[in-house]
Image (cartoon, rainbow, N blue to C red; front, side, top):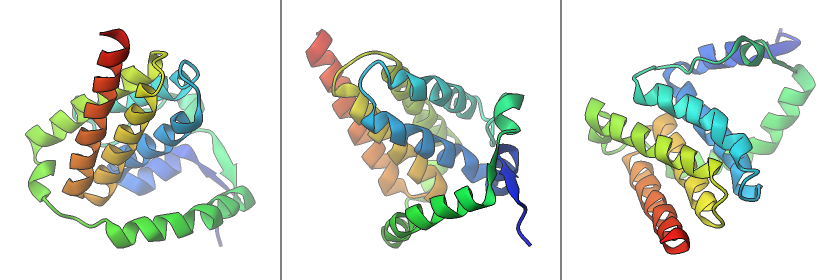
Length: 170
């Protein structure tokens, strides 16, 4: 029998070390559709998660009011019914590869790039914030699936974001 409610804390515990990647992905997705400036609503929590990843936390620390937030069974089931086709499509393409990308130094570099892109979301920079969110989403997917190709995609998207920032403010 499934519990009637599921807390954020239970989800993070269940996902274990993959919880950082999932949180990055789920927080980056809204930033894709939010206008610059408003995307800061996603950028601030992303900055919290990515900084912790940079400092070596395997699971994100979240404030109590977030950890205790819970979701009803039917809302959770509707959410999974909507996202499972996309998840299945992605999992057919993603796989563990280039494992050296997840050694300590490259892993910290990925986290540093994600911190920079999280900060980019807080700034009201047209177009650059979209590529920043895509970069964070790619890094998140990379962490969940341990896919080095997704890491490279994240670095490429980060480069585009930084280049647009340079063109706009350079």
